[in-house]
Picture 1 (cartoon, rainbow, N blue to C red):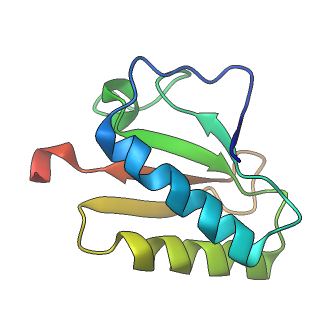
Picture 2 (cartoon, helix red, strand yellow):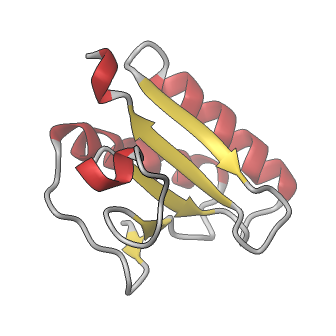
Length: 110
C-alpha cells in the first residue's frame, strides 16, 4: 500500500512511475514495515522550471518519519533496484522540515 498526501496530483500515470510503485512498497516492507510510504508530491506544488514532476516522471516520498538508519537503507536499496534504468533517487534537504526522497525518471536519456 502507498498513501498519498491530500494535495498530491498526477496529470497522468506514466509507465515509468507505475513501474516504481511496487518497488517502493517492497523496499518499505523490508526496512520500515511499521510505516506506509507516502507520496508527498507529484505533478503539483512548486518545482524547478525543468522539473520532471511537471511531465509526471517524478515523485517525492515522505522520509522524516523514518530513523536515520532506515533513511540510509531505503535510499541505498531504491538506488540498487533502479540502477541502470535511467532513474535518479535522492534524499533531498536532509535534516530539514522539507526532507524527502525524490525519484525521477530521466526521460531525456531514453
